[in-house]
Image 1: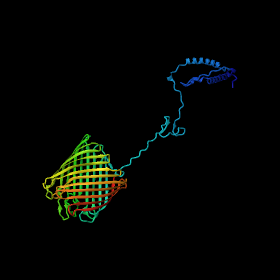
Image 2: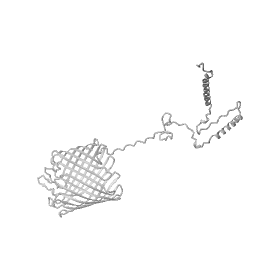
Image 3: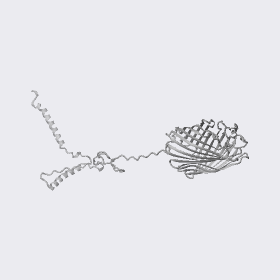
Length: 520
């Protein structure tokens, strides 16, 4: 409303201002809609030419040419006003981005043929390599051992029960006896990158229920060590111990002797070896010193007399040298010599003979390693011993030694052993005996858990100074059934046949045994 006092021209002044503002807004919007958008194109994009405007009714080419001439002039003037752009400032034309495709998925390419290589624009997972078959364990039931630092310990315990038809190994038939044997052992092996330590400890005791005087303890131990001073120099040492009982037929006891009802006499030997080996390329030279101590327990004979075996205790000092040359990985020939002196505690033994002696031995052989099929060592040589007592003849003989392992097949293994030496004896008038032993052992695995074995051995003792020859033959069959890697059932049967040219001394003994062995 307007006041009566307000003039008419002042009352319409706001209305006129509003109309003028509205007209300006409407005019600006119309001019914006008619603006030329050609200047808003992207850099590098081709500028679309403005289509010429043909006059009405012009359809021929002359009119079109005239229109192009008119527009061409305007374009030239506009090009002169715009600055020219270098090709480096221009961006490449935009291209549509392809979608990633996967082989075998919806919208993707079909699966490729086997062993085909996909194009770079297609994502495909690499073909996994074929799974390698794990190599079967050749010894699936061997003990794994217990780790103690860098040492692997393999303990075992075995309990056997059996029957012996002749526990006293007597000439005349005697009644047999049941027996029980407890056997304990430990194997130690170091896992060092340099140096080495290996030990084998074993102890057993056999208890005869009906013949207690035939009870037999036995034990043996060996510890080997090597210290690698340098790449070519190694110092090694060995300690050894052996304990056993003397039985009729032993080379120490006279043939035909009958032991009393007391316990069998015990004999033991212990010693050590220390030395070094130096390598000069494929040539190696070793020098070792050794000492062994042998002691006996007096024997009680059947007539009640005492056989003074303590007088035969002696100490053996020796020096051994060895030269070896490695021709190839499968053969290393060697030459070895040994000189020693055996010193008895008492000058004369129970028979009045002075048995202190000096000995020498030389042998040549080779160490074999034929592609893991035949491994071991074989040698031949000659040895002799000279005694201080002129009544004792020189003890001399050719010697042959072999220790071979032949893997015939993956299931069959053959072990061949041969040993010879010059043994001491207490037989009156005999300087000693030439002892030889040969054995063959065949093991065949019927199954991975079941192994059958056959053992045959022959031992001979030829005495020098007295006309006595002894022969001992042992045949044995055994079977080992592995329940698990740690539990084994064992069974064996053996026959021992002893013959000699001494009257009333031959004997036979059959032994049957079953047992359980626990190992780790």
